[in-house]
Image (cartoon, rainbow, N blue to C red; front, side, top):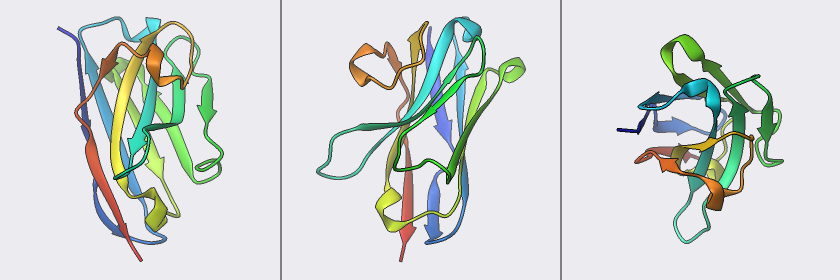
Length: 123
């Protein structure tokens, strides 16, 4: 059974940092790309970062470039999202998701999703 479990969310002041984790199981990690998406109330779910399980290449949305860093620890089947210089606009539920093959942030292509972790940034 495929599982993606997020952790690490919480409440933080603007300018602060959080590190999210996505623990994956039930599939061959290196065959998949893992992305982080977020969804704020009343807004579309947006892709913010992606990492390829095969070669570690990464993609970032402009909204987080330079502030967020995605990384993976293949031995633990875990992907991390280090979030620095957080802003109130970063407040959302953050989900990780897995797609076979190519690294993309097109959410319709994603096969598996985690339940999400809430990130709240106060001003």
